[in-house]
Amino acid sequence: MCVKRKVFHENILNTSHSVYLCKMGGCTNICSSLSKYQFNSRSHMSTDMAADQRKEPGVVIKDGWAGYSLELFNCPEHYRGDLECVYIPHGVIMNRIECLARDILEDIGHHDLMVLCVLKGGYKFCSDLVESVKAQSCSANRRLTTRVEFIRFKSYLNDQSTEDMHIIGPDDLSMLKGKNVLIVEAIVDTGKTMRALLQHVETFQPKMVKVAGLLVKRVPHGAVELPDYVGFVIPNRFVVGYALDYNEYFRDLNHICVISETGKQKYKV
Image 1 (tube, rainbow, N blue to C red):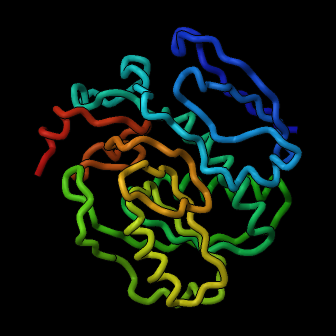
Image 2: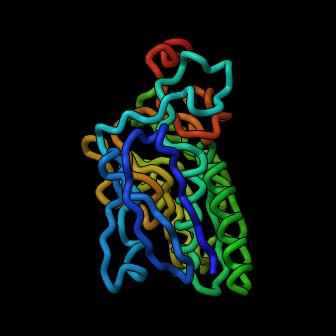
């Protein structure tokens, strides 16, 4: 039996937290309820919780969440003054990815998986997600073959999403025909990019298409449909790190952070 522990130091939280136990997928998780701390998971206890949990929209971060002080984490010195806070620590990201990998395995069973990674922002998420899927499939004694292809969309200028979207990648995705396809995207906001990519992928007649999104941003006129697997639902703040960039900067951050106005002006093009 695997026991996962999520431990938060009282000095960091500056608040008390309750602990509950839940059994999912043969693994007992010790989880912290942080609703008082503006860090809220939209899930509820029921007899069908294990079966239905993957249908939940992910970990929801409320609008009032101010993030963690940068002084509590190790961040590159060259970004001093360019960031407001650490929004989602790297360890929390990795723990959530393990849960998404578990849900993906429950859905695809013993079938092989064709992964389509959306560059550039999705490369870290894709790499960690595929590794977790492979590790968990081995632990469960499942034979699973994964293949990764890459595609790129360009739709941002500075911190604004533009109407002009370009698909950069292989024109021929005929290898997707009849395959179980998992599209891996780092962030979904308006949903325009994902809709365009789904339409493009469907022309190659895959057997099944699922979408994993690490972040879903709450924006006006945002995505109507959530990805099949969601890491975090976040407020409309421009975040960087964990391969997410601002004009190609900040990809080297391990944590997901909020960029400061100083940082926007410094790296503006």
